[in-house]
Length: 107
Image (tube, rainbow, N blue to C red; front, side, top):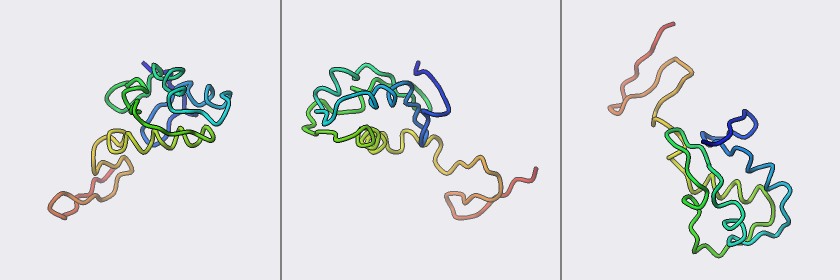
């Protein structure tokens, strides 16, 4: 399971220690090198932890200029898998149902 910390969670994804590791990396970083060095790092999604090599396609011919570009690529590729339940809000109030009607919850 990925190491959890408030500072490594973003948009439903738990990056664990990967951001710190990427900050210390030399750039530009090829996709092949990224996968060879970090492919086994676990990325935490709401329902499971997934190795980075399962998120990033090995056939990609990309070069990363900075840690932010690696992070953004991961965010783009996990997409809706990281969001959790669609239409769910933990903020209370009103939410629209599939038929467009609204329901409110009083606390």
